[in-house]
Length: 217
Length: 357
Image (cartoon, rainbow over all chains, first blue to last red; front, side, top):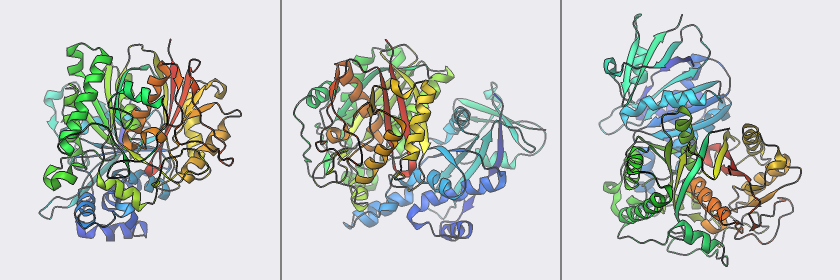
């Protein structure tokens, strides 16, 4: 099966800017969604804005650490003081909300999943997306990390997979020649595809798998 | 139609430390009282602290699964493991603070190790459907042909954050879970560690289909008319190539939530001209959240293998508006089961299970 990748989108947001960026894009605060879900939604929507289309979507994203800030806030600020956890920053819901929020705002969503993976396991995401394309016209795939300490930016990188080839799309296939592929990580594989230029194929490796990306048309 | 079978199951839950004990307990007199220091149905296995207890539970369930699964040592070692949970190890904070927490993937890897599974580990969270999202990934791995057997774990251990979150949403009952009952007033949370060994090798129960859907009406509950649930059930039936009349039993999501149960009742009645037998297991297990799919699957199949449809604990007075009356009884004729699951964030899943032999 041929699969094509569209609109690799790299989003970096300073933590203090996230509420304003969300407000600017969605004309709403989305406070009840919590920061991690907002970060997922902002990146996913930016990818969809760039790719166009309105077909049924699968939404699949991964993170190494997940909703760290919401967890910290809920545990340290609420539970430690004996105050009730705010329902909508309740950690069990946080990672999974983005799919529903996206469905409420822009696209029909048929399935979603949030995975926790080590950085070199990013290569499982395109494999899963391929399977999901049996049910969904397009699969939105992302890697999302909240900033750690030291003032780093939040990261929310996304791309769109589909079977239909279109101008500007990147053809993706599992590569057999993994030893020639450059090692990539969860936090940079989409950024490397976005930054890639020139006619030569891009070979990226993650854990046990490698992927070959070639320009279509 | 998938080519996957349920090869073996194991379970630690409030009904007992193992599946045998749980089935025995479920066949006995219902006891829906909430016990313990928190409003939680707890696994009766103790440990020095949260972490040690989690390890003890994992070792116990792993031992049961290894006996039941009967794989060769090399096959166990090669198993990929998919772990579904809504809370992973957040309960470790209760005892050890931030130092005790580890990334969800690391916790999942330590669980896989307890089972002797050294293949690739994946951790997935889709709230209460997490365990079936793990099953969905497992089915994909088997369909790809790279693995014959895949280990699926659903895990939910007690933690203050989950209790606080559900309490904040005012979704908990102060007394008992009463699925489908006229006097139902909320959920009771439960702990579980469930293990399901899924395989391409034939076994008594085949997974005919697993359909997924999204109910975006609200992030904390289904659309009142149950449309997304009905659509997902319909998709499972279509993929399994079943007519509704061929379904012998519906395993309901129903956990005793007034509105959520009503929405599921509407979905079932929309789809089935004559509603088949139904059962809910949350009155006995509690709502085990991300573990609920594998936990309820393990318990149901173990009961059916003993010729019984388990009773729905907590159900006594039918609700006419809901229109479902789950009841236990003879399970010998049950060949096809439709198994519903749904969760926060709009995730809806329906599993079609078929007796293979």
